[in-house]
Length: 214
Image (cartoon, rainbow, N blue to C red; front, side):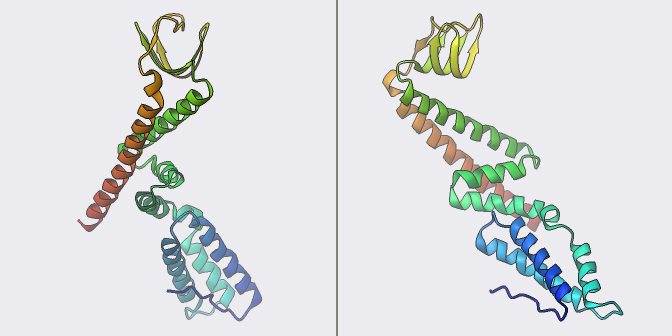
């Protein structure tokens, strides 16, 4: 399958066509190449049929009418791109693809909100793991009476990371429960969460396909 430009007799029509095709390419640039090409070919087919329709209008007028019917690619393609980004993320396992899939689908149901929260947790764990490498003596999983801190405790109420405290923010009474096991545990936890998100996206993709068939 290969994309071929439609050739118009007028320069104005050719220029308008190329600008619109470029906007379709830009709207689909995050997708896999085959998905992007499929959408591009579909739009190109509509443009060809519309511009060649028999009417008393000029070639340019027919083209503009067709473009108006198709709409702005960045807007009309949002649902399709969001769906295909889930497919791409489920295949690639790449963090950026997972982020884009969740970002585009955040309003499409509670499941994507849960995935997004899990992804935020992955980022938090990665953040505190880096803190452990920089501030090894002050970073860990600190637990005490009505206190919880996953991050760095510099003392005097100065902390970084995720924390819950029941009094004045003083974690001096909390104990680092992981010690030297902090980094291995965090890495394993992050890996488990990451695999859970990608598996969840694959399951969600399968469910969406079944719903389309029914």
